[in-house]
Image (cartoon, rainbow, N blue to C red; front, side, top):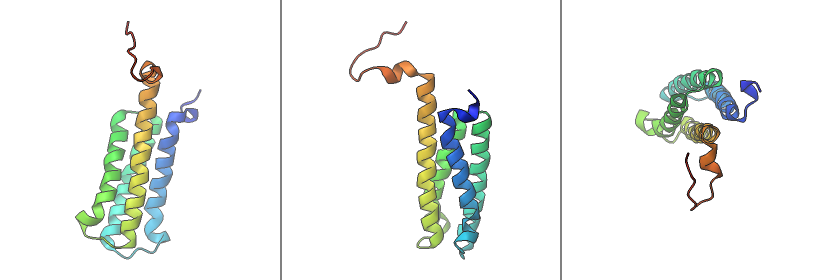
Length: 129
């Protein structure tokens, strides 16, 4: 099965799409706040690079960095001084989606590498050989 057909790749593709939409959102939504626009452009560019890298050659650190970028998007309106703007709403919404998709991708890859951990019944010990 090719790498792009594996279910673990889907969250990376979705994150790539979200980052692309986030990159063009200042034009789509006619954002006027310069700090907000620059933050969305820079953060989305980083997420695009990370998502492409994860699609090509997956590493856990790429997903953890995507989680950090999503958390940054959630916190940046207050840290950079653009609360109560349209850019804030976009930043928080996309940040939540990116964090959730990156965590889902980490879970799917963990599940694939450790199938015995996921198949055990709760409360039952598994014998490791």
